[in-house]
Length: 57
Image (cartoon, rainbow, N blue to C red; front, side, top):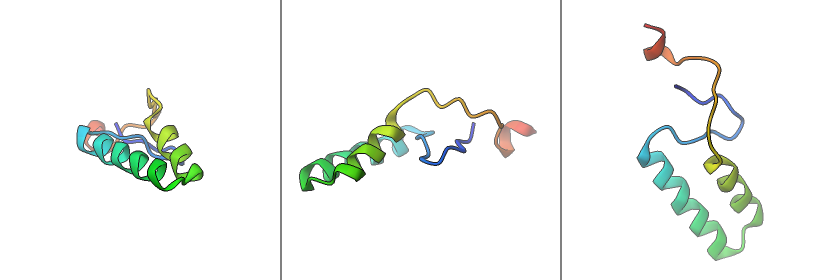
């Protein structure tokens, strides 16, 4: 399932790990907006209404 939200939710464990690392970085430099964006991305579930190209087959 593809995420079509403004702030994309991770679809794989690797994507989730990258966002968690970004969250830690934003917190370490005091970037409040970046922290909020990372938190929004990590909020689940992503209920994307449209299937991606693989699911449509």
